[in-house]
Picture 1 (tube, rainbow, N blue to C red):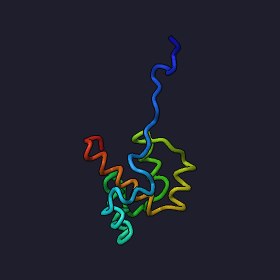
Picture 2: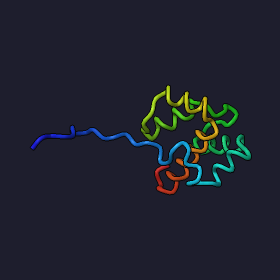
Picture 3: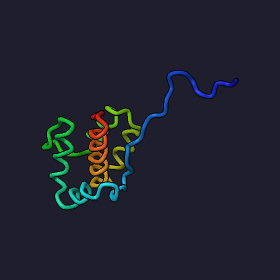
Length: 104
């Protein structure tokens, strides 16, 4: 029998929702569209960070690292540079799902 998978290796998880999965949780997306600073403060608060520091690629990178989510600093930069609102909504949806699963 051939070994197809090395021991102690596993696929790194991805975010639990896609960047543009707004219809999966419309309330979060509406929150982001209507009061973006409030959503940013909510995400920062969930992560025990100061909301006055702002939402940027660093916060996304910290979250990805904490949960070993696939990605890179470059992808974090591009995501927050071109899709900031979607990026923050994705973080909030992922935080909410992890809270429901009891792993946040």
